[in-house]
Structures are given as structure tokens and as C-alpha cells.
Length: 77
Image (cartoon, rainbow, N blue to C red):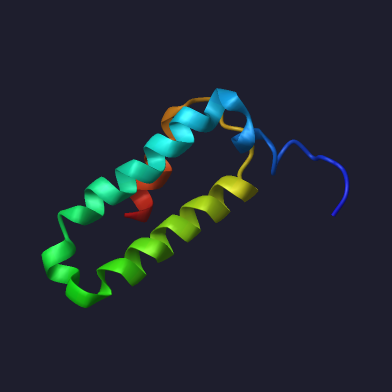
């Protein structure tokens, strides 16, 4: 658990905070269209998507393109 390997810290950099937040909001925006279909399962599914998004950001290499956040968010929702 010690040391930095180039991962696990980049997504906390201010350079990526805006894109990170926008990706999270994009998941919510996409899922909102499915709220009537998901009904009572909406919150559980939304939380699952957000957790997977956070975990994927944690383990992925530093993105070279900010569209990586959008692509990840879209694929999760």
C-alpha cells in the first residue's frame, strides 16, 4: 500500500476534477431517462454505476484525453 505507481492519485489532481465530476453527472443524466423503467431499483442501480465509475478511475492509468471520463461514464450507464 505504499508508494505511488502513477495510478490512484491522478484522478484527485485538480487537472481532472472537473472531468471526473462531469462524468459522474453524465451517469446520472443518462440513468434519469431510465428512472421509470427501473422504478424502485433506480437508486441501487445508480449507486452501483457510481461505485464502478469510481473504482475504474482508481485503477485506470492516467488518461491522455479527457474524453476518457465521458467514455467510461457512458459505458457504465
